[in-house]
Length: 270
Image (cartoon, rainbow, N blue to C red; front, side):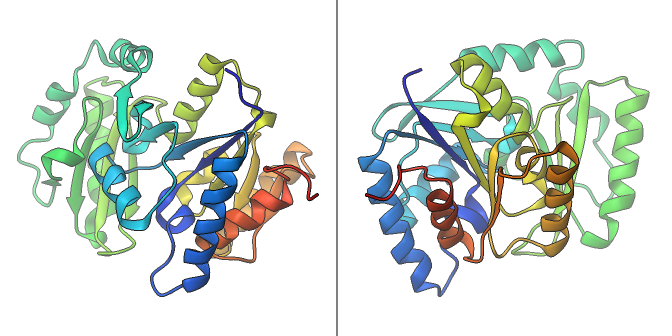
């Protein structure tokens, strides 16, 4: 792969401007210009599904990425022209091998009838992802019950639980074992024959933690939870990395741009 630099970024709370923040909007325009002018490959790394990502690109005038890691790491797409994205067959086959003994339809059947567990919309499900809503106060108990069922059935899946930052409701995702946003990013690097040192990763939330401490140069934006900032800093210190983390003062988009300049992603100032 012929590229010297990679910007891999989360979307919500990171690349997407925050509501009512004109500085974010201005900095997004600058970031768009820098990406067009520079030798930088852009990768979106998000929990969202493809249709939603494409809508967000239009809604917020985001730069169009060359690659998308979506659905919490269970999908990987390559840009094959303008806004046309094609699934990467090798990654599909890889997950099919992991789940061959217990397909997602069997997992869905095992969870039927559990009170308080509401399947998310069809477009938020995936070939290798099973997603549910629940009340925030029941999130932990229901997650524990699902984990128990996964273990009893020896199903090759892992569970991610979170709180929706907008609705404050509980979210549960079942993914093929070991699969995550960070895993997908690592898989992509290996299959593109890229070194981690070529990539700058930006994130803001707990599901970005594994990538933020995965050996990439990292930006943690200014609106990230302080506990996450501490966890990331501790992991970098423990690994002996003293030049791979930028804790941005700018929030969201502005923090991403700030970090790009800090790591000279677009080259040294003239």
